[in-house]
Amino acid sequence: MIRNYLGRRWLNNSAIQAYIEQNSAVAHSTVFQGNLYEYTVMRELSEKLRMTKLEKVGGAHDGGVDVKGSWPVDYIYAKTSLVMGNLETTNTIKRTHSQNGFVLKPLKYRIFDNTFTPLKVLVQCKAFTKSKLAPKEFRELVGTFISLVSNSQRNKTVCIMCSPHLLTKDTLKLINNIALPMIYLRIEMLKESGEGKFDLINSGRLVNYYENSYASTLLQDCNIPAWLKLGIYKSSDFGLQK
Image: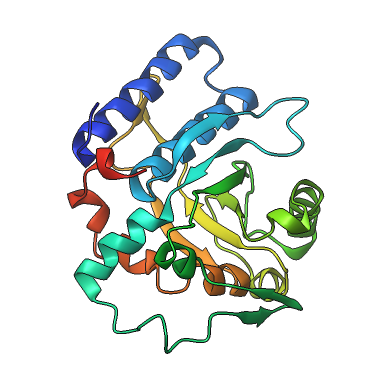
């Protein structure tokens, strides 16, 4: 098993390159571009956020989900706690919080109690958005997630939306009023470097990570923004996570 960051990136880039070469005849079709973006998103989810069991499921019967997988955030919590420290103790913290009409317990308490299981991840990719994602388009995506996540799974599932663009102010306001853990990732599309080749090194990067209010409460003290900003993911072994 390839455990280090550079080795994992080489493996993912090799898979993306193979897809590009096998489909070079249709490289300018929307289907090709959409699939390429989904593979790029999977690379970033795997390498930067340490998601596992990622599966591309986009198709006519996908229910609006392009990628699904698993997220052992307890691994990230443990690593960031070592770097940043955690001064809280389990007997001095209020364990439950109210968020958008729902009572939830941050995941760290499941980690403390050894009852944590990896989160289920549902991902939608919006490769062809030409500008910032507006509220109208966002509501349609939210409706898809709400139909797929029951109340009993609300705190065990994270909904992720990916696009090459930023959110509008109105969309940011909307996303924070949603009673679901939702994360928005701004991930670049791969850039063509000429002659049917794509720049796999300097493009297709995860450039923005945003948790809505519900997700921020659920992921309290997991310090995922710091995990990304400090590049902790680069120095951690993949093989150590559950």
